[in-house]
Image 1 (cartoon, rainbow, N blue to C red):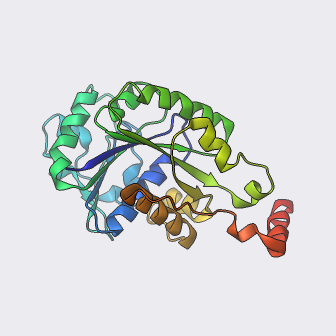
Image 2: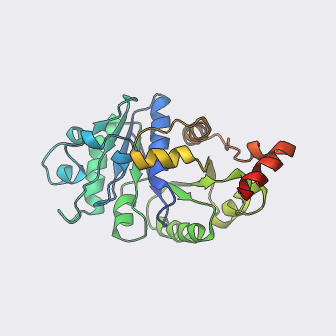
Length: 263
């Protein structure tokens, strides 16, 4: 039986889909069978982030209307054989999709995977409820900005309406230089504001931005380490958090972060 985890945020643009892809890839690299389900109907991006959009034949809507079986719609990752994605439909409104429909698809895949990660649309409208309906765990993704924290707090309130057994927090796009200079909300303040366990911190990384713009795997060692720690925390219950500030400590770190700021 798979662990069914929805990744949500409330606010758009926080990198939730990137976190979903990175987490899925790392869990699969650890030897687990992982499927990523894109539930953002009409705005499918998960297949693009993974670089497999040209391999898509069927999508989740095709499964729901009975055009194909769930396994037929899965696209296998090019480099990690145990990682699959179930793409969303690129056309909105082909059919009215409810939470029950998504749950039926999840149930079809349940016995074949160890992890089912559900990429939730931004906002708190119908798409949010549709995605959360079939999950029993939730990861809330935020950036260290007040607007993101406020939206995440609203999402946490809505999650209480569902049978979500555990909730965890991922802080994405954290910049160690700004954190050291006191120009970003610190990690402790964010955790205290949302009052859920911290699962991981992912650094701001230009390689992630460039890879998302063209599609494909992120090769940054720094981000890879952050995602590995996140994956281990989720699976093992450990509490090792990536330190985004290690490059900016000491005299050379002080010079580095302040020179970067001036540039």
